Image: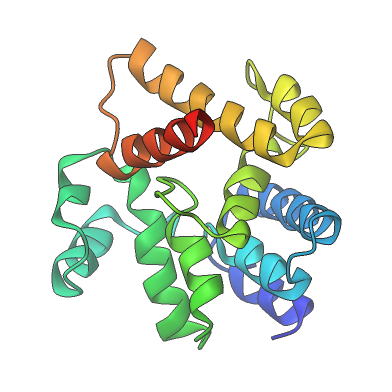
Amino acid sequence: MKREQALAIVKEHLTEQRYLHTIGVMNTAVELAEKHGENVGKAELAAIFHDYAKFRPKEEMKRIIIEQQMDPQLLDFHSELWHAPVGAYLVKQEAGIQDMDVLDAIKFHTSGRPGMSMLEKIVYLADYIEPGRTFPGVEEVRILTAESFDEGFIKSVKNTMNFLLSNNRPVFPLTFQMYNSIVMKMED
């Protein structure tokens, strides 16, 4: 699917602000993919569709999680997590994208998971550092990423975990597992 076609499809499902965010994620993902030898077309497509389900009604997302037998733990956590796995499902059903690499990058762009592929990490990190983001710590992650992709990625995960913990919010198990897998690899 060509960029223009993909953007036209997602634009119908996003607010103007979220569409601009998507453009930022797309451009950042393409830059990261080019720099790190990842498939640029897949990075671009996953970035364009990463928030496809962001504004779907919560009841629709809940129904899809149940009907498609997705991780039932999702329903115990903030609905902000739901749009990623539901989005991957809907992108496959509605936009006809069948590439599992692209779908997994969409599916895990909020929670992460242990053993993420480079493409999954690129979309996760691009979503975090795209130029429109303005929250404490993002500039540090941008600088780290420019120096070392792995260091930037690790810092983005730590920042996300710290944000959730400092606000007394639960951390999704896959996110904890991702963090643990990163730290355990660093110790090797």
